[in-house]
Length: 330
Image (tube, rainbow, N blue to C red; front, side, top):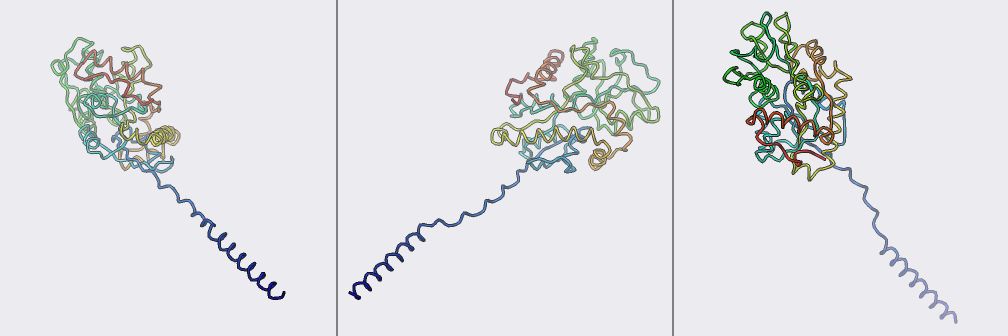
């Protein structure tokens, strides 16, 4: 009897041990802690000039977001195009007219939003008369960068509507803005079409004065607000298709940075000094004649479309083709 009890006890111990082994074997290993997501980095090219201010918040780190935006700068249209075609950027701040022509030449760009609306003025040297566009007949007009830029197409628009022929009745000379300012202040040129802050710089020491506000002129011609969709944020279409949330994030960061620079002008000017080393008082005074305001493409498409169509009607060479709806971000 005792043997039978002992045998039963041994069997129970064996069964319990087997059960414990089975339970232990079925246990899942503890899950590994989640790994932090790798930070997203995007590349943005931005022109030197007044548009260094709206990105100052991003550059300084004062404006942050879920995306790390690496900003680099371009000085000429050719340099900007080279960076785009060489796949050295994801986003670009470009003049709207330049981007429209690149789009017509199969460069798959998409407008995300416009943030520069007022910056260009026509200057006359002190003592030189200007009554209207006909005053430029037989004169030479200096302007920065090159043909096809905003101030170039607006100048051609004004001359043509006044019955003059650009390049024939009025000679166009393109040069870096700093060089134009130097020539203007030394009295070597009579007329210059410049953006701020170079307008303020050129008028120092009573060297000249503003004779025409290009934004006011456009408003009169087009019957719209006195502002021009000068430049904005563009993204490569293939990049946007693969990274839709990044596009939204970068757009929001630029909008926030634009607002930040207007609310923190002294700090924005300080940040911009490395890229645009102009005296802080000049930069600050120039903002009185400058309008930065980020407006998404979906909200300003009508203004952009009207601007491009009007320019093309007057000067077909300036705008090769009116962009279709694919040019605009939803």
